[in-house]
Image (cartoon, rainbow, N blue to C red; front, side, top):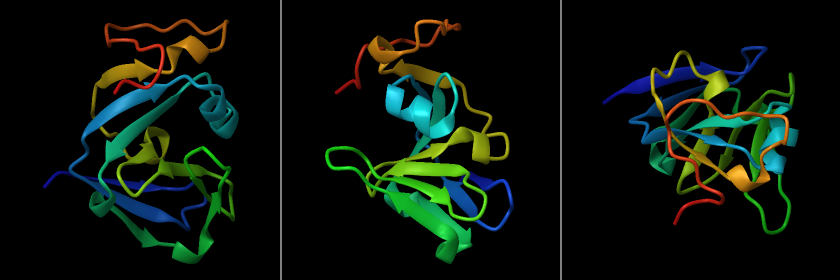
Length: 129
């Protein structure tokens, strides 16, 4: 089983991702606002393969009707993961070098006009079926 360790900025919340499915990059406006970045690289993992190892009491959730819940560290504000329980999308920036290639770009129709996507990974205007 392949595992990748991760943590929030302050280190109070730690997690392990077991057997990651893929790395994708989301370009939707919600992810941009949530992370403050042009896009959000996320590791896709099944619910049973996301293990929060410390700081359970510090993980807060923002929920909005019709959208995936978003989880963050209440102490330092680090955006941790979204979705769940099948699948979760763990922000790749909180993981120790996931060593995965970007498999695809999603929500490209909503990307920031000033952002240019590089690389050879397929680009989908929405979330592919």
